[in-house]
Amino acid sequence: MLFSVLVLCFLIGCVAGLRSMMAPAIVAAAAYLRWIHLEGTSLAWMDTRLALSLWTLCAIGELIVDKLPQTPARTMPVGLVARAITGGLCGAALAMSAGKGAQVGALLGAAGGIGGAFVGYYVRRGLVLQTKLPDFVVAVVEDLLAISGGLFICSHM
Image (cartoon, rainbow, N blue to C red; front, side):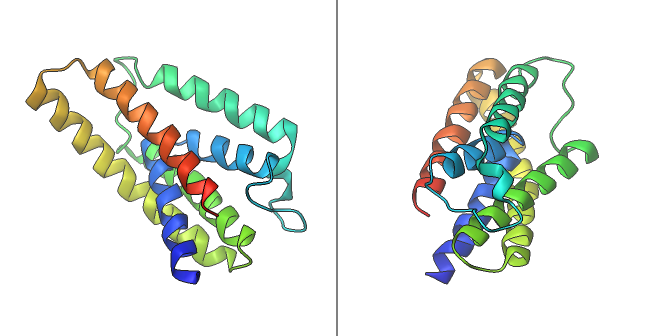
């Protein structure tokens, strides 16, 4: 059980590496729907309608901004810091929901956020170059992967 929780903490961080705001939006939705249980923890605020609304608006905004040509690469320092922070937050939330230590969950989530950012960047870039598909098409597929992956991860807590 502990090993699977730790893996899920890392994987939700990977989702944050793909879309920094999508992971907290999905974790907030999972908390709001009681897929994960944060009541009585320092992250209990994540299961409120306000948190769900704000994270969802941020995630939608990110889905739009990601497609703009002037958007900087996620591997730039600001993007990496955002992904480490949101990955860490989400990893901590999943760990706390399972009654495990928030610190380990946060570290694994942050590591997943950074790793996911680099893997996502190079896979997307490689697919665009190798397949000659428009970046927009590959980006939308990446969006769908982040959303479905995040939902899958949270539904298995």
